[in-house]
View 1 (cartoon, rainbow, N blue to C red):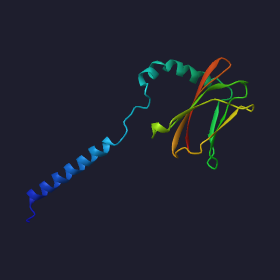
View 2 (view 1 turned 135 degrees about the horizontal axis):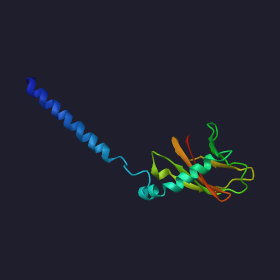
View 3 (view 1 turned 90 degrees about the vertical axis):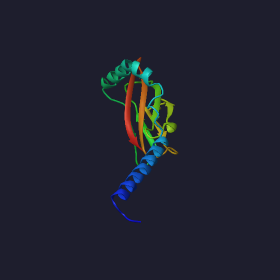
View 4 (view 1 turned 30 degrees about the vertical axis):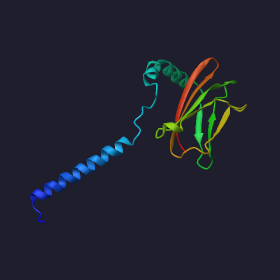
Length: 146
């Protein structure tokens, strides 16, 4: 077979089409879901979320969320000024929606809640805490690596 400019163009376009078909195939394998199933309803309720953020900023001592590398545990330390704390903790995995889960706030007498990360997939997680104390609602979000 003789190699000339016509053959080069045919080979170039053939390779281009094959790469394009492969990229389209791979893009169909990716999960394109929204961050939240209730995206528009969450947007309408943003003022309430903003009020929680303002309440959290006005605290003398804020909620502390920490994850120790050697231990498979996430520690939440609530402010000592509140005697009773309630609410919800949401573990959000940006790379896999199926791994997300929620837990109730159950702090002990020392205002600390320990959550085991045993069995969770490794990677980046966002810990979102909606909590209530003394008739006010608060919000804290922290990114951790497991």
